[in-house]
Length: 171
Image 1 (cartoon, helix red, strand yellow):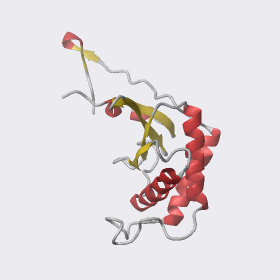
Image 2 (spheres, rainbow, N blue to C red):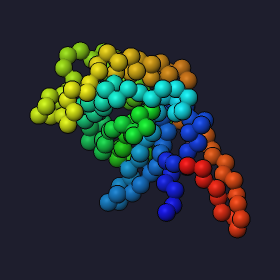
Image 3 (cartoon, rainbow, N blue to C red):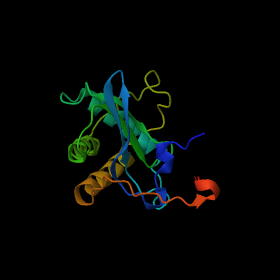
């Protein structure tokens, strides 16, 4: 099997930011997958499951209700490694535009008060696993990082070439 693009990213040199993970064409329309990286993988702790779950609910609700973006949002959800989220949108947008959208979205988490959207037993598959205070803490930290140390270009992975020109992958 071929290695998928996200596993070819050098996770030993990946920092918080917003990266284009991939671009696809679906039904003649561009769909861009953004890597919304909140922590440095393997260097910082992953996000607590309850915190990222809460961020998922609040940001998904925010994005799908934003008058400018709601018709462009395809998907928002956490990465399995719990170091960030994936955002899939119709179209292709400059890094700065996505940065401003994420600053607004995560600031919404910081300022959020009340019940987490969709957090009842009828509306969520794990409604007891939410942590609004920790979600706010993580969101505040990410907003600050987006404002002060924004990154949007993946570090390139250098792969060892072995017999016959094949590339060596350590993953």
